[in-house]
Length: 497
Image (cartoon, rainbow, N blue to C red; front, top):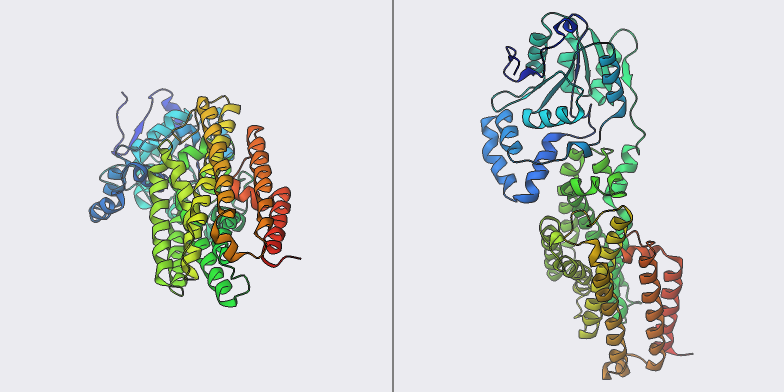
């Protein structure tokens, strides 16, 4: 192995072509420069998936310094360097420098175990400068390591942030990629036009933020209004306002959960044909955004929830607890995951009932259990169908194999049809005669629901169900027409001609 440099964190991969150091060596930053993400956040989230105590352990490690913190978090962190979101322009710049015969080094504040794996994967670097357990290789520390390695030869440095300014100040050639606000101001203050590499076309930050919040998933929270309909309180302003407040609180809470879920699920998303384009997985949105915004959304959601009865706040807390359990553990458990999903749907109905202080009926809960269990299985079936189309044998991040598709479909269809049976039994129960003037009209809901179930499962079988079935129904024209017909049937059963 070639000898190490005077800096413990810097070393050479090979000792050949020492004369190349006489040319201008190229030093490239990692986080936000070579890749559109931050490996400290990535390693923290990667460890969090398998150890929920990591946040508390990090608080214990932090007093020892940032270098020690990075080292402890990097221990046991497994990741796929080939799936990271690389900046193509930086890769091209590195290749051009190598073609010129220049030495190229990866210079990063990330831990050396992470930097080494990335460098080994790319095979483009002559050496690595990185943090270890004793020294955080950022700012002045990184500059000293670069100067020691360059041995007085002028060098080029590629960076992106405020932390790179001390290195840029001593670099002979300053190159930037996607500079932050402070870095942009510094670059503009320098003589001559700044050398900024182009970035890959990605959604703008506001657009990526809206996508990350998954506002379209708020459609699922329309289930909160179902108790208003079932309790015949559609014309009660107080009930409608309470349900609207509950809808907003659940929406904010759901967006926070989606932020956390997408950050925890980075590896699985990057291994998925469509999910790899999600804002965090693609690097369109920094992970720091999610770490900052998620707690704020939770606080606002619960502050709004306090306007409603305590039972609603309890349901909101239970929803958050189950979603966290789902994100970190349950989603990788066979069958338990779809039971959890079905439970989360039903919890929206329970929360809607709590918001208007009514007790949901046995029939409503039984119906929701079967229909949502079936739709949760449809979601898994769609994921398995997409995995099979890509030639994979299993769905990423799930404990299902493509070979399970027949069982998933059969169970899902059976559960959906059971919900129709529950509806039929409800229509024939004494409760209906008390609530509806013309209950015979409600029988028309059964064939309507049978048609919809058959249709959406047929679409799933054809590979056309590429999102959550409830969200699909809220955006699908045929489903909306059927919902409108169903509403008319309910009105006729209540009021008649």
